[in-house]
Amino acid sequence: MCGISGIIDLTGRGIDRDAVIALRDSLAHRGPDDVGEYIDQHAGLGQRRLSIIDLSPAGRQPMPNEDGTVQVMCNGEIYNFRALKSQLMDSGHRFSSGSDCETLAHGYEQWGMEGLLARVKGMFSIAVWDRDKRALWLARDRLGVKPLYFKIRDGKLAFASEPHGLYDDIDMGPDSLDRESLDYYLSFGYVPPDRAIVSGIEKMPPGHVLRYDAHGAKSWRYWDVNPGATSGRMSFKDQVDTVDKLLKAAVVRRLESDVPLGSFLSAGIDSGLVSAMAADSLDEPLRTFTVGFDGDSAGVDERPLARMVSERYGTDHHELFLSTEDTIPLPQLIWNAGEPFADVSVLPSHQISRMARNDITVALTGDGGDESFGGYANVYAAYFGSKVKRWVPQSIRNNMEKLISGSIRDVSAPSPVHRLGTLLKFAEKSPIELYDLPEWWNSELRSDLYALERRTTNASDSPLRIVEQTLARAQNLDDVAQILYTDLHLRLPGDYLTKIDIASNAVALEIRSPFLDHDLVEFAASLPIDSRMRGWKQKGMLRSLATRYLPKESLNRKKTGFGPPLASWLRGKWAPLVQQLVTDGIANRAEWFDRSTIRRTVDEHMSGRINHASRLWSLVCLEVWWRLFIDKTMKPTDQL
Image 1 (spheres, rainbow, N blue to C red):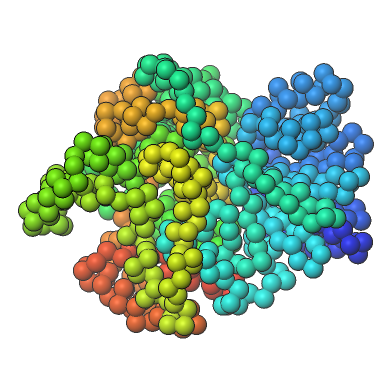
Image 2 (cartoon, rainbow, N blue to C red):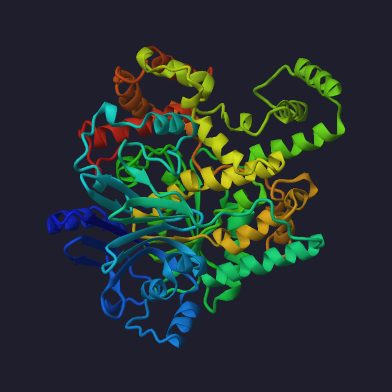
């Protein structure tokens, strides 16, 4: 992990070195080990380095080719750089370091940018400056692990790993917010992966490359998973064997490091599989890290099952316990993100990253398994719905739903009958309807949230339009495959990978996720849905694989989110936070929001009548962002 940035000016005005250095050093937390810069008449590049491979000064970036006509920076890791380096050396290229980044400079010379991107395996955001062609190339990895922002303004292109350094010449006021991005944030808790919250800032989408030269900027998609591919007539056992082989290879690729390495271990099967395979592949005990929360019930606390996995594989295990007494570094995390972000699990992710950083510099995680193998409720609802629609006529389904709904008396204690009724209800929903999430400010609630003059009935303004555009790219597939494809392109990079980046970069910890290996992702996409949901279970295939590695207690554990019990915490020790940032904060942003709606939402939650936890937390995080970047009345170092 590191921070890369740069300013390109092709007008002949020259490059302001102070501006290049200021932009670079806005990313200091991402790279505490070293700094680098390159400046010529048209380009200024800067990098803050977290040293992982080749810790010597020879690994400093920007990294040149032999004659200095090409300069390359990379945030991330290229896992197959040794194989590529061997090919390039056979073609006559001379290397001066052991860095994976240097492979990119020579690879660009040998194969061109698109040829290079077709060959690399890794997580990365890349900048390539071709001095002779006066051309800048920017690229983001296939799945969007590493972020990259840019702006084109006054004849210059500026880019950075985080957006806050790009705000310097933008008039940051209430009208600087991008309305569609704000709508999407309120609907899902994160800004979409191809948009930014501030107008004038662009976010490089996953799997895209951009070229900027005298003709302007042009970007295009260089990779996409093929959701219509098929794995052929493989038996289920052969499918599981292949997933086993691909995941193990992905884990081993991510173990190469010149600094200490460990793994995050929860009670889930994804992190359990990664940790088990890593432990089996190392000659010394793997360091593992788990977190628990004040208020967790016995069925939610992940630590007991994590201990069982640790004991089986002899890991050096560490545990962290979080409570409402802990200070909340939310301003620092929102500052690093540069955008509002309301996935509350970023807090424990940051805390466990901070604890792990005392012992390691690289951590493996299980992120990515849900998106490829069907771990989310919307996927299961679509899968269940497809079976119900195939086997049960519409008239019978309608009568069943009415009968079940009429039999439910206590909705606060969901019974199997209640859950069946919920599944039948969701079985009738289309893929797009399964994304209108009730826990956030969905389409029904969002209109009342806005001030009267900000309200709109124009359907094109709906954040669901972004979802529809993504679903459309898989429109020839069944509903389940469409949702899996959309989760991979929206929820994964926009929410979960953003969370990982925010939480870990604040403490200069590099995160590696074997489930995001594109060979594994492509194979998973080729598998029949019935294989991935084997036994009518979420991630049924991974559960079958897990029988080879994990205790039986891990296999049928109900999926739970990785986060604190937010609803009760907001009513309890965090209630003053809601008062300060919502009731006395965002509710008074009359140019955007309706005060009475917000105060009613607070009252309903605090009284226990309605659980508005996610909605209130989205307003808390938005207000923190507002005070940091628009009002400038809050500092990143403030504690809440």
